[in-house]
Image (tube, rainbow, N blue to C red):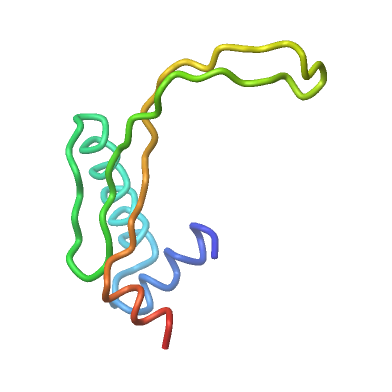
Length: 92
């Protein structure tokens, strides 16, 4: 499912117009993005949790020249952990 299909499904379920559903989806994504940038966690009970995790600096290898070692800097990675309700629904 892509974004346009998701917007159409949201409009169908909520009774909103597609334009309003897209605005709601964009507002949700922007809000989650801002929270993660600020270092906060977004927890939706029954659905899941969006958070960031620290990745340590490490060494990697260039696949074209396996002997050449490159330094990969530390970074933050956004992650999503599905909640129990979502897991149960998917596994029915």
